[in-house]
Length: 509
Image (cartoon, rainbow, N blue to C red):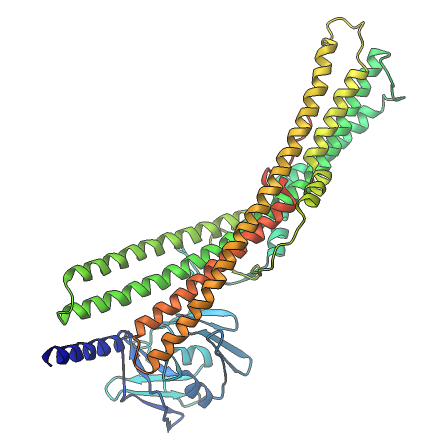
Protein backbone atom coordinates (compact mmCIF):
# COMPACT_ATOMS: atom_id res chain seq x y z
CA UNK A 1 0.00 0.00 0.00
CA UNK A 2 2.88 2.35 0.87
CA UNK A 3 4.56 1.54 -2.45
CA UNK A 4 1.33 2.40 -4.26
CA UNK A 5 1.09 5.71 -2.37
CA UNK A 6 4.66 6.57 -3.32
CA UNK A 7 3.93 5.76 -6.96
CA UNK A 8 0.84 7.96 -6.91
CA UNK A 9 2.80 10.77 -5.26
CA UNK A 10 5.55 10.46 -7.87
CA UNK A 11 3.01 10.54 -10.65
CA UNK A 12 1.48 13.68 -9.17
CA UNK A 13 4.90 15.31 -8.90
CA UNK A 14 5.71 14.46 -12.51
CA UNK A 15 2.33 15.67 -13.73
CA UNK A 16 2.84 18.94 -11.92
CA UNK A 17 6.39 19.45 -13.12
CA UNK A 18 5.61 18.55 -16.73
CA UNK A 19 2.74 20.99 -16.70
CA UNK A 20 5.18 23.68 -15.59
CA UNK A 21 7.72 22.93 -18.30
CA UNK A 22 6.37 25.82 -20.33
CA UNK A 23 7.08 28.03 -17.32
CA UNK A 24 3.47 29.13 -17.41
CA UNK A 25 1.46 30.63 -14.58
CA UNK A 26 -2.16 31.50 -15.06
CA UNK A 27 -5.38 32.06 -13.23
CA UNK A 28 -5.63 35.61 -11.91
CA UNK A 29 -4.50 37.70 -14.88
CA UNK A 30 -7.22 40.15 -15.90
CA UNK A 31 -7.58 41.59 -19.41
CA UNK A 32 -9.30 44.90 -20.08
CA UNK A 33 -9.85 45.94 -23.72
CA UNK A 34 -11.11 49.46 -24.40
CA UNK A 35 -12.43 49.63 -20.84
CA UNK A 36 -14.26 46.28 -20.94
CA UNK A 37 -13.11 43.38 -18.77
CA UNK A 38 -12.74 40.24 -20.87
CA UNK A 39 -13.62 36.63 -20.03
CA UNK A 40 -11.76 33.79 -21.79
CA UNK A 41 -12.02 29.99 -21.58
CA UNK A 42 -8.22 30.05 -21.45
CA UNK A 43 -6.95 32.99 -19.38
CA UNK A 44 -3.61 34.70 -20.08
CA UNK A 45 -0.47 33.07 -18.71
CA UNK A 46 3.07 34.13 -17.92
CA UNK A 47 5.65 31.99 -19.72
CA UNK A 48 9.40 32.59 -19.54
CA UNK A 49 8.74 36.04 -18.04
CA UNK A 50 6.51 36.91 -21.00
CA UNK A 51 2.78 37.49 -20.73
CA UNK A 52 0.81 35.42 -23.25
CA UNK A 53 -2.78 36.29 -24.15
CA UNK A 54 -5.44 34.41 -26.16
CA UNK A 55 -5.03 35.61 -29.73
CA UNK A 56 -8.58 35.17 -31.04
CA UNK A 57 -10.31 36.84 -28.11
CA UNK A 58 -7.97 39.82 -28.03
CA UNK A 59 -7.66 40.34 -31.77
CA UNK A 60 -11.36 40.00 -32.48
CA UNK A 61 -12.11 42.49 -29.69
CA UNK A 62 -9.78 44.91 -31.49
CA UNK A 63 -11.64 44.43 -34.80
CA UNK A 64 -9.41 41.85 -36.48
CA UNK A 65 -10.64 38.78 -38.36
CA UNK A 66 -8.97 35.55 -37.22
CA UNK A 67 -8.74 32.28 -39.20
CA UNK A 68 -7.26 28.96 -38.06
CA UNK A 69 -5.66 26.38 -40.36
CA UNK A 70 -5.69 23.17 -38.30
CA UNK A 71 -3.71 21.21 -40.88
CA UNK A 72 -0.86 23.70 -41.13
CA UNK A 73 -1.15 24.73 -37.46
CA UNK A 74 -1.23 28.34 -38.63
CA UNK A 75 -3.22 31.39 -37.57
CA UNK A 76 -4.01 34.23 -39.95
CA UNK A 77 -5.40 37.52 -38.66
CA UNK A 78 -6.31 40.51 -40.78
CA UNK A 79 -7.47 44.04 -40.13
CA UNK A 80 -7.70 46.80 -42.71
CA UNK A 81 -4.58 46.44 -44.90
CA UNK A 82 -2.57 44.38 -42.41
CA UNK A 83 -2.26 40.58 -42.52
CA UNK A 84 -0.62 38.60 -39.73
CA UNK A 85 0.47 34.97 -39.78
CA UNK A 86 1.78 32.81 -36.96
CA UNK A 87 2.79 29.17 -36.76
CA UNK A 88 2.21 27.30 -33.52
CA UNK A 89 5.45 26.65 -31.64
CA UNK A 90 7.37 29.34 -33.53
CA UNK A 91 8.95 32.49 -32.15
CA UNK A 92 8.59 34.12 -35.55
CA UNK A 93 5.45 35.89 -36.74
CA UNK A 94 4.87 37.72 -40.00
CA UNK A 95 3.21 41.05 -40.57
CA UNK A 96 2.53 41.66 -44.26
CA UNK A 97 5.18 39.02 -45.07
CA UNK A 98 7.81 40.76 -42.92
CA UNK A 99 8.98 38.77 -39.89
CA UNK A 100 8.65 39.89 -36.29
CA UNK A 101 10.62 38.16 -33.53
CA UNK A 102 8.63 37.10 -30.47
CA UNK A 103 10.03 36.70 -26.96
CA UNK A 104 8.20 33.41 -26.54
CA UNK A 105 6.85 30.88 -28.97
CA UNK A 106 3.15 30.78 -29.71
CA UNK A 107 1.39 27.87 -28.01
CA UNK A 108 -2.00 26.23 -27.61
CA UNK A 109 -3.71 25.73 -24.28
CA UNK A 110 -7.29 24.49 -23.93
CA UNK A 111 -7.76 24.93 -27.64
CA UNK A 112 -6.72 28.61 -27.57
CA UNK A 113 -3.70 30.08 -29.35
CA UNK A 114 -1.62 32.21 -26.99
CA UNK A 115 0.73 34.95 -28.19
CA UNK A 116 3.08 37.39 -26.42
CA UNK A 117 1.26 40.49 -25.29
CA UNK A 118 3.66 42.87 -27.01
CA UNK A 119 2.72 41.38 -30.37
CA UNK A 120 -0.71 42.96 -29.99
CA UNK A 121 0.86 46.41 -30.12
CA UNK A 122 3.36 45.44 -32.81
CA UNK A 123 0.74 43.97 -35.12
CA UNK A 124 -2.39 46.05 -34.63
CA UNK A 125 -0.94 49.28 -33.30
CA UNK A 126 -2.87 48.98 -30.05
CA UNK A 127 -1.56 50.48 -26.83
CA UNK A 128 -0.73 47.91 -24.20
CA UNK A 129 0.03 48.13 -20.50
CA UNK A 130 0.91 45.38 -18.04
CA UNK A 131 0.44 46.11 -14.35
CA UNK A 132 2.56 43.64 -12.44
CA UNK A 133 1.05 44.53 -9.07
CA UNK A 134 -2.59 43.99 -10.05
CA UNK A 135 -1.69 41.43 -12.75
CA UNK A 136 -3.84 43.33 -15.22
CA UNK A 137 -3.41 43.71 -18.95
CA UNK A 138 -4.91 46.90 -20.36
CA UNK A 139 -5.29 47.11 -24.14
CA UNK A 140 -6.69 50.02 -26.12
CA UNK A 141 -6.86 50.94 -29.78
CA UNK A 142 -8.62 54.19 -28.95
CA UNK A 143 -7.00 57.59 -28.96
CA UNK A 144 -6.87 57.85 -25.17
CA UNK A 145 -5.50 54.32 -24.63
CA UNK A 146 -2.68 53.53 -22.25
CA UNK A 147 0.95 53.54 -23.27
CA UNK A 148 3.04 50.44 -23.60
CA UNK A 149 5.37 49.43 -20.79
CA UNK A 150 8.50 48.62 -22.78
CA UNK A 151 10.39 47.40 -19.73
CA UNK A 152 8.07 44.42 -19.38
CA UNK A 153 7.13 43.75 -22.99
CA UNK A 154 10.48 43.25 -24.65
CA UNK A 155 9.66 41.68 -28.04
CA UNK A 156 11.12 43.79 -30.87
CA UNK A 157 11.02 43.73 -34.66
CA UNK A 158 14.10 42.05 -36.07
CA UNK A 159 16.92 44.37 -37.04
CA UNK A 160 18.87 43.96 -40.26
CA UNK A 161 21.80 41.56 -39.74
CA UNK A 162 25.23 43.00 -39.11
CA UNK A 163 27.72 40.23 -38.51
CA UNK A 164 25.68 37.15 -37.74
CA UNK A 165 22.84 35.45 -39.57
CA UNK A 166 20.11 33.42 -37.92
CA UNK A 167 17.27 31.44 -39.43
CA UNK A 168 14.82 34.17 -38.45
CA UNK A 169 16.91 36.99 -39.89
CA UNK A 170 15.02 40.01 -41.15
CA UNK A 171 14.36 39.41 -44.83
CA UNK A 172 14.17 42.72 -46.69
CA UNK A 173 13.44 41.20 -50.07
CA UNK A 174 12.20 38.17 -51.95
CA UNK A 175 14.38 36.36 -54.46
CA UNK A 176 13.06 33.97 -57.09
CA UNK A 177 15.29 31.49 -58.89
CA UNK A 178 14.75 33.16 -62.29
CA UNK A 179 15.63 36.58 -60.89
CA UNK A 180 18.75 35.12 -59.28
CA UNK A 181 19.83 33.72 -62.66
CA UNK A 182 19.32 37.08 -64.37
CA UNK A 183 21.32 38.82 -61.65
CA UNK A 184 24.14 36.27 -61.87
CA UNK A 185 24.39 36.55 -65.66
CA UNK A 186 24.32 40.34 -65.52
CA UNK A 187 27.07 40.38 -62.88
CA UNK A 188 29.27 37.72 -64.46
CA UNK A 189 32.70 38.89 -65.61
CA UNK A 190 33.10 35.51 -67.32
CA UNK A 191 30.12 36.30 -69.55
CA UNK A 192 31.63 39.66 -70.43
CA UNK A 193 34.98 37.98 -71.20
CA UNK A 194 33.35 35.36 -73.42
CA UNK A 195 31.38 38.04 -75.28
CA UNK A 196 34.62 39.95 -75.85
CA UNK A 197 36.26 36.75 -77.07
CA UNK A 198 33.43 36.24 -79.59
CA UNK A 199 33.97 39.70 -81.01
CA UNK A 200 37.74 39.18 -81.12
CA UNK A 201 37.62 35.80 -82.87
CA UNK A 202 35.04 37.11 -85.35
CA UNK A 203 37.39 39.92 -86.37
CA UNK A 204 40.33 37.50 -86.66
CA UNK A 205 38.25 35.11 -88.76
CA UNK A 206 37.16 37.90 -91.08
CA UNK A 207 40.73 39.07 -91.52
CA UNK A 208 42.03 35.55 -92.12
CA UNK A 209 39.30 34.86 -94.67
CA UNK A 210 40.35 37.75 -96.87
CA UNK A 211 43.17 35.65 -98.37
CA UNK A 212 41.02 32.57 -99.07
CA UNK A 213 40.05 32.30 -102.75
CA UNK A 214 39.03 28.64 -102.92
CA UNK A 215 38.61 25.48 -100.86
CA UNK A 216 41.47 23.05 -101.54
CA UNK A 217 40.45 19.44 -102.07
CA UNK A 218 43.99 18.07 -101.84
CA UNK A 219 47.56 19.23 -101.25
CA UNK A 220 48.58 22.00 -103.60
CA UNK A 221 50.37 25.32 -103.13
CA UNK A 222 51.82 25.16 -99.66
CA UNK A 223 51.12 28.79 -98.80
CA UNK A 224 47.48 28.52 -99.89
CA UNK A 225 47.03 25.27 -98.00
CA UNK A 226 48.52 26.80 -94.86
CA UNK A 227 46.27 29.85 -95.16
CA UNK A 228 43.17 27.70 -95.51
CA UNK A 229 44.09 25.58 -92.47
CA UNK A 230 44.61 28.79 -90.50
CA UNK A 231 41.20 30.04 -91.60
CA UNK A 232 39.57 26.73 -90.67
CA UNK A 233 41.11 26.98 -87.20
CA UNK A 234 39.97 30.59 -86.65
CA UNK A 235 36.49 29.71 -87.92
CA UNK A 236 36.36 26.89 -85.40
CA UNK A 237 37.54 29.25 -82.65
CA UNK A 238 34.70 31.64 -83.52
CA UNK A 239 32.05 28.92 -83.43
CA UNK A 240 33.46 27.58 -80.18
CA UNK A 241 33.36 31.06 -78.64
CA UNK A 242 29.66 31.38 -79.48
CA UNK A 243 28.86 27.95 -78.08
CA UNK A 244 31.02 28.74 -75.06
CA UNK A 245 28.73 31.67 -74.29
CA UNK A 246 25.71 29.35 -74.25
CA UNK A 247 27.51 26.86 -72.04
CA UNK A 248 28.68 29.57 -69.66
CA UNK A 249 25.11 30.76 -69.20
CA UNK A 250 23.94 27.18 -68.64
CA UNK A 251 26.72 26.74 -66.11
CA UNK A 252 25.59 29.87 -64.26
CA UNK A 253 21.99 28.63 -64.29
CA UNK A 254 23.15 25.40 -62.70
CA UNK A 255 25.35 27.15 -60.12
CA UNK A 256 22.45 29.37 -59.10
CA UNK A 257 20.14 26.35 -58.89
CA UNK A 258 22.67 24.48 -56.75
CA UNK A 259 23.33 27.40 -54.37
CA UNK A 260 19.65 28.41 -54.22
CA UNK A 261 18.60 24.91 -53.17
CA UNK A 262 21.52 24.55 -50.76
CA UNK A 263 20.44 27.79 -49.10
CA UNK A 264 16.98 26.31 -48.62
CA UNK A 265 18.58 23.26 -47.03
CA UNK A 266 20.77 25.36 -44.72
CA UNK A 267 17.72 27.30 -43.56
CA UNK A 268 16.01 24.01 -42.75
CA UNK A 269 19.10 22.88 -40.85
CA UNK A 270 19.04 25.98 -38.64
CA UNK A 271 15.33 25.65 -37.93
CA UNK A 272 15.74 22.01 -37.00
CA UNK A 273 18.79 22.72 -34.84
CA UNK A 274 16.81 25.36 -32.95
CA UNK A 275 14.00 22.88 -32.32
CA UNK A 276 16.51 20.28 -31.11
CA UNK A 277 17.89 22.77 -28.60
CA UNK A 278 14.40 23.43 -27.27
CA UNK A 279 13.88 19.68 -26.97
CA UNK A 280 17.18 19.31 -25.10
CA UNK A 281 16.32 22.17 -22.76
CA UNK A 282 12.97 20.61 -21.96
CA UNK A 283 14.70 17.32 -21.15
CA UNK A 284 17.17 19.15 -18.94
CA UNK A 285 14.32 20.74 -16.98
CA UNK A 286 12.73 17.34 -16.52
CA UNK A 287 16.03 15.84 -15.34
CA UNK A 288 16.51 18.68 -12.87
CA UNK A 289 12.98 18.30 -11.52
CA UNK A 290 13.39 14.55 -11.12
CA UNK A 291 16.72 15.03 -9.34
CA UNK A 292 15.27 17.66 -7.01
CA UNK A 293 12.53 15.20 -6.14
CA UNK A 294 15.10 12.42 -5.61
CA UNK A 295 13.81 10.50 -8.58
CA UNK A 296 17.13 10.47 -10.42
CA UNK A 297 20.79 11.27 -9.91
CA UNK A 298 23.10 14.10 -10.91
CA UNK A 299 24.36 11.90 -13.72
CA UNK A 300 21.08 12.26 -15.62
CA UNK A 301 21.26 16.05 -15.23
CA UNK A 302 24.87 16.03 -16.44
CA UNK A 303 23.92 14.00 -19.50
CA UNK A 304 21.02 16.34 -20.25
CA UNK A 305 23.28 19.37 -19.82
CA UNK A 306 25.80 17.87 -22.24
CA UNK A 307 22.99 17.31 -24.74
CA UNK A 308 22.05 20.99 -24.55
CA UNK A 309 25.69 21.96 -25.10
CA UNK A 310 26.00 19.63 -28.08
CA UNK A 311 22.83 20.95 -29.65
CA UNK A 312 23.93 24.54 -29.08
CA UNK A 313 27.18 23.77 -30.91
CA UNK A 314 25.17 22.20 -33.73
CA UNK A 315 22.98 25.31 -33.94
CA UNK A 316 26.03 27.60 -34.01
CA UNK A 317 27.51 25.57 -36.84
CA UNK A 318 24.21 25.54 -38.73
CA UNK A 319 24.02 29.34 -38.45
CA UNK A 320 27.58 29.71 -39.74
CA UNK A 321 26.79 27.35 -42.63
CA UNK A 322 23.70 29.41 -43.44
CA UNK A 323 25.77 32.59 -43.32
CA UNK A 324 28.27 31.04 -45.75
CA UNK A 325 25.47 29.88 -48.05
CA UNK A 326 24.07 33.42 -48.23
CA UNK A 327 27.54 34.83 -48.83
CA UNK A 328 28.29 32.40 -51.67
CA UNK A 329 25.02 33.05 -53.48
CA UNK A 330 25.35 36.79 -52.91
CA UNK A 331 28.78 36.76 -54.53
CA UNK A 332 27.36 35.00 -57.57
CA UNK A 333 24.38 37.33 -58.06
CA UNK A 334 26.17 40.56 -57.18
CA UNK A 335 24.48 41.24 -53.85
CA UNK A 336 26.26 42.76 -50.88
CA UNK A 337 27.67 40.14 -48.46
CA UNK A 338 25.28 41.18 -45.67
CA UNK A 339 22.16 41.29 -47.82
CA UNK A 340 19.42 38.86 -46.83
CA UNK A 341 16.20 37.85 -48.55
CA UNK A 342 13.51 35.22 -48.48
CA UNK A 343 13.70 32.57 -51.17
CA UNK A 344 10.50 32.66 -53.19
CA UNK A 345 10.72 29.30 -54.98
CA UNK A 346 10.68 25.96 -53.21
CA UNK A 347 10.96 22.78 -55.30
CA UNK A 348 7.86 20.60 -55.32
CA UNK A 349 8.16 16.84 -55.52
CA UNK A 350 6.99 15.00 -58.59
CA UNK A 351 8.04 11.54 -59.66
CA UNK A 352 10.94 11.71 -62.10
CA UNK A 353 10.07 9.95 -65.33
CA UNK A 354 12.61 9.82 -68.14
CA UNK A 355 13.96 7.38 -70.72
CA UNK A 356 17.69 7.24 -70.05
CA UNK A 357 18.61 6.00 -73.52
CA UNK A 358 16.68 8.83 -75.17
CA UNK A 359 18.31 11.39 -72.87
CA UNK A 360 21.79 9.99 -73.57
CA UNK A 361 21.16 10.35 -77.31
CA UNK A 362 19.88 13.92 -76.88
CA UNK A 363 22.83 14.89 -74.70
CA UNK A 364 25.40 13.51 -77.14
CA UNK A 365 23.66 15.33 -79.99
CA UNK A 366 23.44 18.70 -78.24
CA UNK A 367 26.73 18.65 -76.32
CA UNK A 368 29.20 21.36 -77.27
CA UNK A 369 32.00 19.20 -75.91
CA UNK A 370 31.12 16.41 -78.34
CA UNK A 371 30.73 18.90 -81.18
CA UNK A 372 34.13 20.41 -80.42
CA UNK A 373 35.80 16.99 -80.34
CA UNK A 374 34.25 16.13 -83.69
CA UNK A 375 35.47 19.43 -85.14
CA UNK A 376 38.98 18.61 -83.99
CA UNK A 377 38.69 15.29 -85.81
CA UNK A 378 37.73 17.21 -88.95
CA UNK A 379 40.72 19.53 -88.54
CA UNK A 380 43.08 16.60 -88.10
CA UNK A 381 41.65 14.96 -91.22
CA UNK A 382 42.01 18.25 -93.12
CA UNK A 383 45.67 18.45 -92.15
CA UNK A 384 46.12 14.89 -93.35
CA UNK A 385 44.33 15.61 -96.64
CA UNK A 386 46.48 18.68 -97.29
CA UNK A 387 49.71 17.00 -96.26
CA UNK A 388 52.58 17.98 -98.61
CA UNK A 389 55.20 15.27 -98.88
CA UNK A 390 57.63 17.62 -100.66
CA UNK A 391 57.87 20.16 -97.85
CA UNK A 392 61.15 19.71 -95.91
CA UNK A 393 60.83 19.27 -92.12
CA UNK A 394 57.15 18.35 -92.19
CA UNK A 395 55.76 16.17 -89.42
CA UNK A 396 55.91 12.55 -90.63
CA UNK A 397 52.71 11.51 -92.43
CA UNK A 398 52.27 8.60 -90.01
CA UNK A 399 52.29 11.08 -87.13
CA UNK A 400 49.54 13.10 -88.82
CA UNK A 401 47.52 9.90 -89.14
CA UNK A 402 47.97 9.31 -85.41
CA UNK A 403 46.64 12.83 -84.74
CA UNK A 404 43.42 11.80 -86.45
CA UNK A 405 43.25 8.65 -84.35
CA UNK A 406 43.90 10.62 -81.14
CA UNK A 407 41.14 13.09 -81.98
CA UNK A 408 38.73 10.23 -82.65
CA UNK A 409 39.62 8.56 -79.32
CA UNK A 410 39.13 11.88 -77.52
CA UNK A 411 35.68 12.19 -79.06
CA UNK A 412 34.78 8.69 -77.96
CA UNK A 413 36.06 9.43 -74.45
CA UNK A 414 33.99 12.62 -74.24
CA UNK A 415 30.86 10.73 -75.27
CA UNK A 416 31.47 8.04 -72.67
CA UNK A 417 31.97 10.61 -69.91
CA UNK A 418 28.73 12.37 -70.76
CA UNK A 419 26.83 9.10 -71.01
CA UNK A 420 28.18 8.03 -67.63
CA UNK A 421 27.21 11.41 -66.10
CA UNK A 422 23.64 11.05 -67.40
CA UNK A 423 23.26 7.53 -66.04
CA UNK A 424 24.81 8.45 -62.68
CA UNK A 425 22.48 11.44 -62.30
CA UNK A 426 19.48 9.27 -63.16
CA UNK A 427 20.45 6.57 -60.65
CA UNK A 428 21.11 9.16 -57.94
CA UNK A 429 17.72 10.79 -58.52
CA UNK A 430 15.99 7.42 -58.31
CA UNK A 431 17.88 6.61 -55.13
CA UNK A 432 16.77 9.91 -53.59
CA UNK A 433 13.20 9.19 -54.66
CA UNK A 434 13.34 5.91 -52.76
CA UNK A 435 14.52 7.78 -49.66
CA UNK A 436 11.72 10.30 -50.14
CA UNK A 437 9.13 7.51 -50.32
CA UNK A 438 10.50 5.98 -47.13
CA UNK A 439 10.31 9.31 -45.33
CA UNK A 440 6.73 9.86 -46.54
CA UNK A 441 5.77 6.43 -45.23
CA UNK A 442 7.39 7.26 -41.90
CA UNK A 443 5.61 10.61 -41.83
CA UNK A 444 2.24 8.88 -41.87
CA UNK A 445 3.17 7.03 -38.68
CA UNK A 446 4.83 10.10 -37.13
CA UNK A 447 1.79 12.29 -37.73
CA UNK A 448 -0.51 9.63 -36.36
CA UNK A 449 1.68 9.34 -33.26
CA UNK A 450 1.69 13.12 -32.84
CA UNK A 451 -2.10 13.25 -33.05
CA UNK A 452 -2.37 10.44 -30.51
CA UNK A 453 0.05 12.19 -28.16
CA UNK A 454 -2.02 15.36 -28.36
CA UNK A 455 -5.23 13.49 -27.59
CA UNK A 456 -3.57 11.71 -24.66
CA UNK A 457 -2.22 15.02 -23.40
CA UNK A 458 -5.70 16.55 -23.51
CA UNK A 459 -6.99 13.85 -21.16
CA UNK A 460 -3.92 13.81 -18.93
CA UNK A 461 -2.35 10.58 -20.22
CA UNK A 462 0.70 12.18 -21.84
CA UNK A 463 3.10 14.93 -20.88
CA UNK A 464 3.82 18.13 -22.75
CA UNK A 465 7.32 16.95 -23.55
CA UNK A 466 5.96 13.79 -25.14
CA UNK A 467 3.74 15.89 -27.37
CA UNK A 468 6.67 18.12 -28.27
CA UNK A 469 8.91 15.17 -29.13
CA UNK A 470 6.20 13.61 -31.28
CA UNK A 471 5.78 16.86 -33.20
CA UNK A 472 9.55 17.22 -33.48
CA UNK A 473 9.74 13.85 -35.23
CA UNK A 474 7.15 15.06 -37.73
CA UNK A 475 9.01 18.31 -38.35
CA UNK A 476 12.34 16.51 -38.72
CA UNK A 477 10.94 14.12 -41.30
CA UNK A 478 9.22 16.95 -43.19
CA UNK A 479 12.44 18.92 -43.46
CA UNK A 480 14.40 15.84 -44.49
CA UNK A 481 11.86 15.35 -47.27
CA UNK A 482 12.23 19.00 -48.33
CA UNK A 483 16.03 18.61 -48.45
CA UNK A 484 15.71 15.55 -50.68
CA UNK A 485 13.35 17.37 -53.04
CA UNK A 486 15.85 20.25 -53.29
CA UNK A 487 18.66 17.81 -54.15
CA UNK A 488 16.52 16.12 -56.80
CA UNK A 489 15.65 19.50 -58.30
CA UNK A 490 19.36 20.31 -58.73
CA UNK A 491 20.18 16.90 -60.15
CA UNK A 492 17.45 17.14 -62.77
CA UNK A 493 19.31 20.01 -64.40
CA UNK A 494 22.59 18.09 -64.35
CA UNK A 495 20.80 15.07 -65.82
CA UNK A 496 19.69 16.92 -68.95
CA UNK A 497 22.86 19.01 -69.28
CA UNK A 498 25.69 17.10 -67.62
CA UNK A 499 28.29 19.45 -69.05
CA UNK A 500 27.21 22.10 -66.54
CA UNK A 501 29.14 20.10 -63.95
CA UNK A 502 32.37 20.59 -65.91
CA UNK A 503 32.08 24.33 -66.56
CA UNK A 504 32.21 26.07 -69.90
CA UNK A 505 34.03 24.43 -72.75
CA UNK A 506 37.53 25.67 -73.39
CA UNK A 507 38.32 27.34 -76.68
CA UNK A 508 39.97 25.48 -79.51
CA UNK A 509 43.72 25.39 -79.38
